[in-house]
Image 1 (cartoon, rainbow, N blue to C red):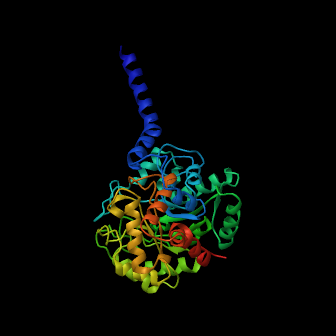
Image 2 (image 1 turned 60 degrees about the horizontal axis):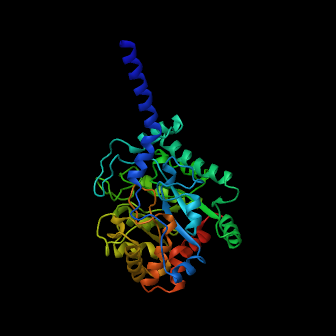
Image 3 (image 1 turned 135 degrees about the vertical axis):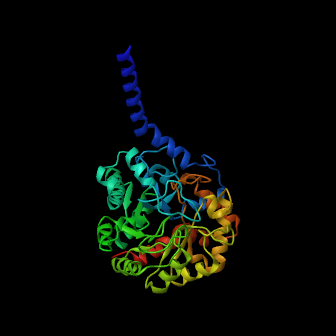
Length: 388
């Protein structure tokens, strides 16, 4: 009897471990990366016709955090290469998440238990990436590069202006070709050493935000305790990133950090995913003054889709935020930044981005203006700022 009990307990333990490494990660993503309406998505004939001609770019997705094969179509989450191709998305920014609270709050997050550690363990990341934040970023970067190498040309990684020009030319012949660009959500992978900018650059990173949900040694977060500005180390970071040709991303930055960065930046800066206070007032979203400061640097603002970005639940809310930003700074400074796979509920997955095209047309934008917002502005910015 005792042996049977021990055998049953061992079996339950084994099943529990298997669940942690198989069922739990999938269930967590089902719960965290929800979609309000599942496809197929219906848009007007005019929108579908226009969308098929566009170079669509999305400046932010956290897909590399999750344990899915980018090349396999999934029923979970929002983004994979097959769904990007179906949705007509030409360029997806893939941003690595390496250090975040277990339950991030919009207003204040003191340093505490790190949620990425649990994901790394559950998804069986290499041990060194569990211990090292820098290795977490490099591991996620390798996932993207390995997917590209297995894709047979279906996924291209953009590192230089030449890469971008070649991809645009190839996409004219293959409308299902997809490109990816690497970014880092917060400068935590630097592990306090600005010299690690070179390590990330060599791994293919071309965009990085100084902060994420915490204040750190580089500057203040919109969700941090002190919401400080850029530190002296942060100023050194901006100079180093600009010297290497990396875009500075001010998503999640405190108001003081935004002010400090735009005051010293000599190149365009971006906000990869955000909302605007005029249509959705919270401390994460941008004021009209902040929109103007970023635009004055030649930057681009990516409007997100999730409810705290738009205070809405559909593409029409995205279009209203785009309309406001365009009215304030001009349509040439506005873009898309979905925050797909960012532990947020979205109104649609990436196969439904045509709904944004439709909503922008309904909002009164011309075909040329829609083309600019949906991706033209991002392609222009990258062609001007990526390393040669």
